[in-house]
Each structure stands twice: as structure tokens, then as C-alpha cells.
Length: 306
Image (cartoon, rainbow, N blue to C red; front, side, top):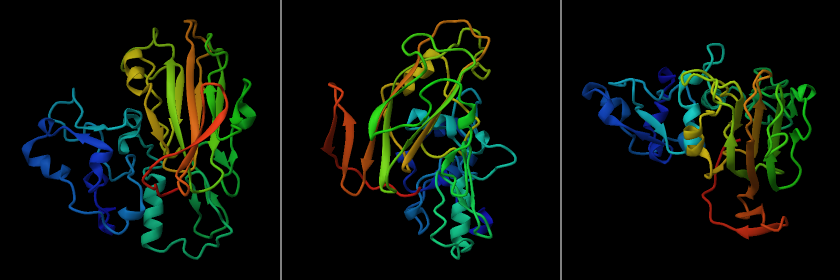
């Protein structure tokens, strides 16, 4: 993509809002590769920071010692989405990479506004339908693709502008062999979703530290084109993401839980609170302690991108 004049994502002027760089673990000759730009270019002004871009270095790229990370996310939940190391070989570009190239070469300018691609999707070359990301289907990618596979209650699109999402049976042990997805969908493009993981308790006793967890818990706050890494099941890693509020860069949030059919250790699963934000009115709705929905005014920097 450098051939098309697109620079490294981790060198953006605003990179310090999203990543931290440990230059002490980078050879002197490679350190210029991590130097920040002096300003945002015309495309970056309207494009959110893409931590999963093919033009973003991985967490340990150019590391002097592979034991330590060079790049770490300011927001711990995004540590699982850094760079092309998490991308599959058949889809090396993130959805925002594709959107950027389409915008540069005016590939989809001729597409009608009657093709409102949703959930991180983008128009096909002939403008007949949208190319969907993981979890979605339909001409506009507006449907949950695997809804017919859910095998526990409470899955699907969440109702209301604020509430809670919990694992089946929470706070008791969640069922084995479960598959469920929860979608929080804003009513307009100007809305965003704020959420916090209140608790995260998954089976880890039978997992080697370097292996993938048997029970997988995915949270996609910035698009489902990043699928490779689920949140870690180990308690010390879970503590890094629990209790911190996060804001999506689009008007939706997708959460997924898959549990191992053969697990036997008792664990309580997860509890997530969410609330929607309207960037035009600078107001959000949240669930108060008495269970009622209330509105408050907040000061937020407008986010861009869907």
C-alpha cells in the first residue's frame, strides 16, 4: 500500500492516543520506522486509527528481544487486534484498508446511496451488494449470519439503549458447548456504544499459557474483520480489561461466546454493561443503580467512520 502513497498506520500523528512504543526494545537502525508524522494527511483526518491495518506493525515486529512487546495498545482490549499478525492470509487487508483504497481510486463513488453497507462492510465493484465482515449477511450486511446456530437463550440483537449482557446462567457456571452472539445496534450513524466488562471468569486450568483458550470470548468494538484473537482466559490478563470503559468507532458492538463441550471447571462467565451515545446531541443513556434509564450530557470528541 506504500506504492499508493499510504504510510504506516503506527506512524500517524495521533498514534499516541492508541499505542505505546517501547523503543528500548528496538535496534537503533530500526527506530526511524516508529517515528511519528508531524501532521495528519487528508485521508487520516476522516479515517479512524486502524490498529489492525496491514500497514500497522505487529506488537513484536523488529523487537530486539521477542520476550517483550515493542507496540502495546493504550486500551488493553485492543492488544488482541494489533497489526497484520492477527490477520488471515485470505483477508490480509482490514475493512478500513479497503475503504481507504476505494476512496483514493474512487472505486465506489458511482454506487448509489441506496446501498447502505452496514457493520464494517463495503460495496462490491459492481455496486450490487455489500461485502460482509464476520458474523453478518444479507445484501446490506444487516443480518446476523449465524443466528440459527445459537443454542442458548438471550442471544441476538439487544433491545434498548442501555443494559447488561451476561453469559448464560451468570453468575453461576455457564453451560458447556454453548454458542451465542449479542449485537448492540445504535439507531443512527451518529451513535456510538460505550461498554465496560464488569467481570470475566473463563476456564483456564487446562490451558497451556501459549495456547488458545478452550472457551473463547470475543468483543469487536471496531469491526469484525479481526477475528484471530479472543480475549485471554487467564485471570491476570482478564484483570487488565475489566473495569475500563470503551467506546466503539461505529454505531454497533458485537460480542461472542463459544464454550468447550468437554470443560468441567466451574466458572461464572462474563458481565458487560453498555450504553449508547449520540454524538450529535452529546448525550448518552445509561442504566442507573435502580434499573431505570436516565440521560446525561457529556463532552466527547466526535468519532468518524462506520
